[in-house]
Amino acid sequence: MKIAIINLGVDTNYGGSLQRYALCKCLTDLGHQPIFIPTHFYVKVPHGVKAILLYIKRIILKYILRRDNTLTVLFEKKCKIDEDINMPVFYEFFRRNVPYYNRIFESLDCLKELNNDNFDAFLVGSDQVWRASTNTHYYFLDFVKKGKKIAYAASFGNAAEDYTQEMINRIRLLVSKFDAVSVREKKAIDIFRRFNWTLSYTPECVLDPTLLLDKDDYLKILNQSSLKKNNDRNLFYYILDFDSQKKSFVERFSYNKGLSYHGLNSLHPYLEFSDTNPLPSVEQWISYIRDAEYVITDSFHGTMFSIIFNKPFITLLNSKRGSERYNPIMNQLGLEDRLVADNQLDQLSDVDFPAINWKFVNDRLSQLREKSFMWLKQNIV
Image 1: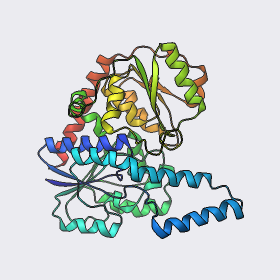
Image 2 (image 1 turned 60 degrees about the vertical axis):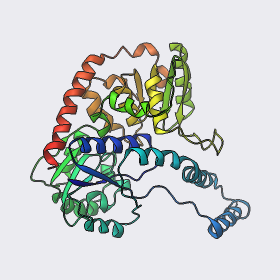
Image 3 (image 1 turned 180 degrees about the horizontal axis):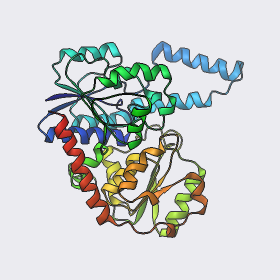
């Protein structure tokens, strides 16, 4: 089958890049032809006359109206760095590893043109595609006129409460037209019931696409690169929402473990680094986890790859980004004791985390992987 993959737009997101890769690889292994549909990639930075006008506006705000526009300037700097420096790093991984439609779709009207491309199915997912803050109708495939409609490992994140009654009513009809729906968290099934989104079947919980592949699949990506293994005993941290408390915890924990530490955080490269210093490549990010002796992260996919590579880890819960999405998989794998709330950091030490029973984790993950893979096989025919 020729399958259009509808997902969040390509950006400087390691987990997003790798779950697109994993889903496309699984579908290809099943004999299908998946094609990722790029939507919005990034916030466009103005150039030319628009850039000059924007600069004048900043001057007026800061020196005449006396308004603090620091956050605005920082956001624009982030967009500029992403567009000029970081995105090419991710595009390169994207071009080498993910089959994609050679066009960026920026509106619902543009997506309607896909109906002329003879797709047999449209698949939305994975990730938080049904989060209310990012919700648009194309994540519920309202533009699709023909072909099967499927959702794989779709997630609401923590934002189901943000759905208005008007949104719930509008989407009810769209959801009812899906041929198959699977979700990443059990909570999503409860949301279907609460919103009275009726289907002729019960949505099933499946694994995030990144977990459908094993360590050897990702090592093949690294083997294609020239990256050398780092044999130093180190702790790698990948913290999306970095602050002084988390920084102190990383320093204290790594010291107690006798490990050097390095990592990526929300400030890199917008504050601490040169504008000419790009983010590490997707391959480098994988290698950081492969080579680490310990991982500290507040990222969902940082956690998933720690599990895939059997690395002892601590996950700092991040309610803004959706902390409840961790519970199902962590409970199933017996890893719920690796989840730590922000208000616990000052009291924690390395002795609070016993060794992980990786045999149990890997055996259980293998069972869940087989079940999720079977869902794909049975529902995409």
